[in-house]
Length: 294
Image 1 (cartoon, rainbow, N blue to C red):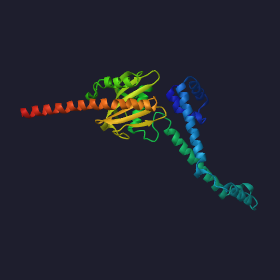
Image 2 (cartoon, helix red, strand yellow):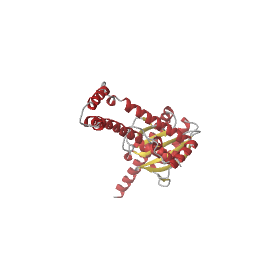
Image 3 (cartoon, rainbow, N blue to C red):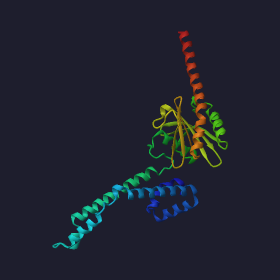
Image 4 (cartoon, one colour):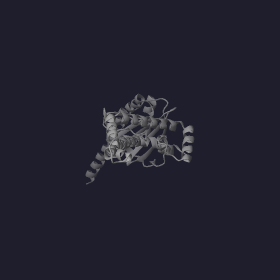
């Protein structure tokens, strides 16, 4: 069993729904894999908090005197004549109470199940749609830099001229802020329709991604000023600069991750201004030359 299979089965395991042979494989993987043990503990804690929240919610509490009223009605009906005890007990009034209780229980279960499904991917930011650019970038970091999934389209030949030289710039700035982080990969990858220039750094115990994408490909929660987000697994800082979206995502602490992102703002602004300036200048020279020929 691999980590992906384990995480897909975590909810079923906690609900005692796995077959015996599958359960054995699950437990064997659990004993051998530290990250999956941590993942299972997070899911267990989430389930516990949701169960406690539903059970203690004011709207689901039995109103004062409700139990006494029910018992009194049951006693009154059992003293009645003409019906068997079972008929009296399962009359429409008690059944209505049972039905109401089932509605509350099933409603709470639906809320709980929905929450655990949303939270089953700990690299995503809770409260944001999974297609929001922040979560798209977080998923790209997780699958490309951490899990090394093969379902991302990775390109190295069709480099965007606007991003030429970014590997050296990004490597220099990240290295000056976080001395142990070394650039191990610079490539292009595409996830959910967004093409990222992806720079992956590896530290002694941490992995960091710098992801850059054209702003026209971006839809969602991002502004020109720095914004920060946290998922259970990662810290995410993002900003826009000269029509480009930039993300720094890592398992560093929040302040270190944001500091690395802040270190990139001014150098990237200068880089893109120069690139865009050259593009504009090149167009003007071409246009002047064409008019002169005309």
